[in-house]
Length: 111
Image (spheres, rainbow, N blue to C red):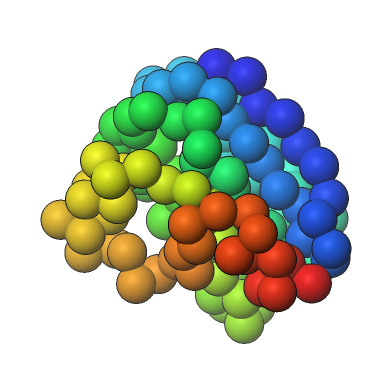
């Protein structure tokens, strides 16, 4: 899995590509931890190139958003496909995240 990073407005946007499972989930968790330490609040994960995530990846995302929630923000998820959205709904964690269909729709939240 490859993870690119860029700034959009006042937010850091991570864009993983590929399935997020096992060790890749841990790599994403480390990148999120690094970003959270220096981002000042607004962090997004663009899921447009992610086909699947496992329970470890879900745990990583929940841990990141819980850390942000303590600071008054939430992790922003962009372009999650139907499978990922269903996983978030079934596990009852969807409400922990700000979710947008695409980067353009999220632009106001990334300011």
